[in-house]
Length: 140
Image (cartoon, rainbow, N blue to C red; front, side, top):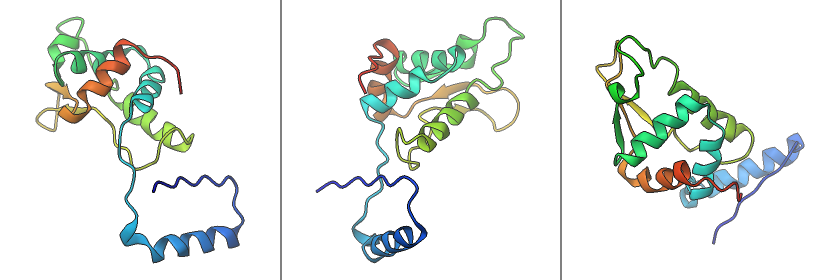
């Protein structure tokens, strides 16, 4: 059984009782952490052009795109491009497009300082984001 509950502007008493009920059954509750086709499409369409390019290139290349392949010139910067993805994921959770348990589908790869060497989409997300980047439908 799958139950989804959305309560807009709950009273304090209702919220307290609902949270108590959920706490009583916490062992049986599994958080939703799945990037579905619809969620991936909605995220992709909510992104600025540079962030879309990271997802599209990484997905079309099997999950990884090097930073050099994304840079338009030797001195060009990718600063902030992947941050837009994280902000869109957070904004989508606040807007109720997906649960706040979803993480960014793109992970910067690098030494931890300085320029990133590339971007990675985990293998289990490549196909759903490849579809979203190549044929976003807006059918959600």
